[in-house]
Amino acid sequence: MENLQVYKFGGASVKDAAAILNLQKIVQMHQGPLLIVVSAMGKTTNALEEIYDLAYRGEEYRLKLGELEEFHRTVAGALLEAWEVDIVLNEYLDELRQHLRQIQLAPADYDQQYDQVVSYGELLSSRIVAWALGTNWQDSRGLIRTDQTWREARVNWADTEAALWGMLRTKGGPPMAQVPVVTQGFIGQASDGRTTTLGREGSDYTAAILAYCLRAESVTIWKDVPGLLNADPKIFPDTVRYSEISYRETIEMAYYGASVIHPKTLKPLADRGIPLRVKSFLDPEAPGTLIHDCQHPTLAPAYIRKTDQCLLSFSSKDFAFVSEENLEVIFGALAQAKLKINVMQNSAISFSVCTDFSERRVNLLLDLLREQFTLHYNTGLTLFTIKNYTPASLAQLTVGKHLLLEQRTRNTFQFVCTA
Ligand code: ASP
Ligand code: MG
Image (cartoon, rainbow, N blue to C red; front, side):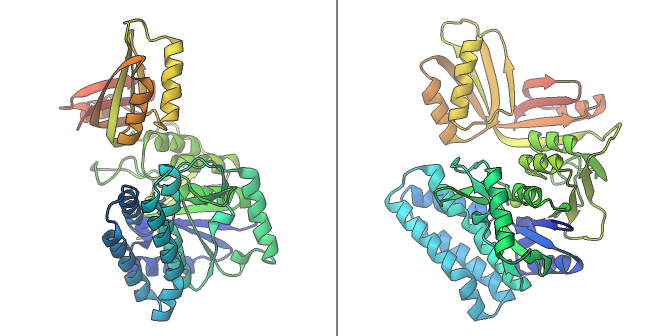
């Protein structure tokens, strides 16, 4: 769609009424067709995860749910009339309560039921933002069509594209050409009508899916940092901002765990040559970062830290080599347990992988492999990656740390260490 721009606002940019008013200012500065994708407010998704866990375990969740409800009512109340607040929130809050009641009575498929609950963060926030802006609101679940890989749903591109263009046609032309349209990040719908989610922090990906299917002119991700930085400023002092950077470099950084952009976001944009801007919602006039097709001879080293890692080592019980057949079994089990490999290393009699720690998933893996392998694992570890490392950057980051595993390629240095 000609001139269409997609703006994505993350949790921090809708965390309270003041933030939403700031969002409104940014939107008002824009001219032309605009599609706005919003995340859940602040830490709502974490809170919903907690509430869901309590309900699933049959424990008391109503107190926490009450706090979440109160939080949304307070923010909406600061922006809207009292009667509007009920219209905007009640339907979804009722649905959410109903889901939780059912789950507490009959906990079943954990991941499937998770999606039915955790998706309400975006539904609630998008309703508040759309009403505060006085614009159109669109349920993205009818548009983003996925399979049933709960919590990590895969997009059905053909159906999604058809649904999007169908929506535009039935509404008598693109609604976002008149006034901006607000929709939700993170969520989609399976063919059976149930809600799916695209993976934590998946709202960026939603923006890219929409931009790809609608052939948007560009995507802008509004964040609380001045652009794409070479490290998280909360962890590393002296960060530098990349003023422009290629899709490829950014994909790699996201893959290694740079939390600035969801890793799946870049591919659809690169495929259609749609530029991605990362800008600060605190300083909207500042240049930010432009991610597009470009060349750069040298880039500042990027430092990426992933915490809460687990290092698993498998050895075959008979001290035989870890063979291709064994690896096939191990990879199969990792996939089945939905554990993603962040780093792996093979030695004569053992094979090690570093993954994000999830007790549930690791226990499932142990059950699957216990008979064939001896397994050891350490938790509470940190994985550091330095992309485009230099000897100085490497020395500086490793000093004083206890390294359990390290790996070096021409451009990238990774190590797993305690704490
Ligand atoms: N609200 C979801 C999350 O916190 C998705 C997102 O913010 O991108 O993971
Ligand atoms: Mg977020």
